[in-house]
Length: 303
Ligand SMILES: Cc1cc2nc3c(=O)[nH]c(=O)nc-3n(C[C@H](O)[C@H](O)[C@H](O)COP(=O)(O)O)c2cc1C
Image (tube, rainbow, N blue to C red; front, side, top):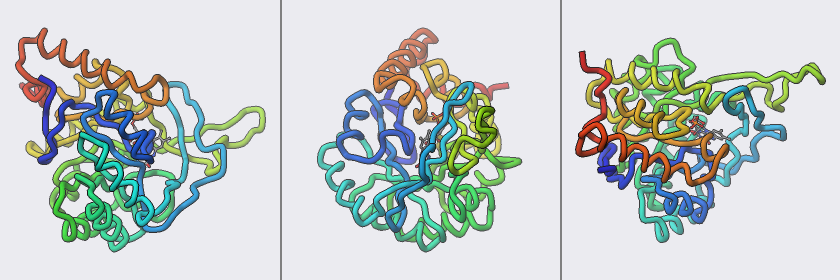
């Protein structure tokens, strides 16, 4: 009923942990797996270790979070040991999120991640708050093509590209990613945002601007998935952005997503959100007289 697949990855359930949320250690990824996630995505990893930004790095917004954590990570060489350990204890696919400052760097990290045992890589070409990487690449179809082609040439595992919502037309970047070799797309990363403290009269985050996540971005993320599906009938899509409960997940499936990633809901609630979304989706599919969650994907596109 709940099993599905994305670009050849077999998932026992269509809920996944989004990158950057509890996503470092093998143990915490395994806790998410035991809570019912069909797959987990690691925090984004680069070539070298990186500290990220000083505090404050996260601020609560009206209906979500604004974060500018700054991609802190231990670097792929150290993280490869964690990937190897994760592969021993995890019974679900491990997707390693990667970033770099050039096509070569993305390819280097991807190759090492897959060499250590990653079942797939997700390219973070959409982080809105670190210069010279993330959305600075993903917003530019030419750079995006170089990066995706470079990674595709060195990995033999599913290649997922995580798109930025901070573009005029997400179908343009989606098409560029698929043409360059993406096997699946994650839509979307955070929306560029700002919070100001009236007391100090200054921006709250140390990086000034950050990325908005949570319920505030769900309608935008849903529209992004819908737009991509209209232009690209076949590419597997993973919906991401403001999935807080099973109703949200169902809306993403109907818009064209085969699976959903959950981020802010884990920070707001706890890991039980995975089981509760899975149960709600299962009840919905049964109530609507379908045999599997796969059968409801794309149904919002019927004329
Ligand atoms: C604190 C925090 C850290 C994040 N770190 C990453 C990251 O390292 N790589 C990445 O691709 N996305 C990162 N994201 C974005 C999430 O993976 C996700 O795309 C976004 O939060 C929207 O989903 P949500 O509304 O379910 O949280 C981060 C989000 C938050 C809130």
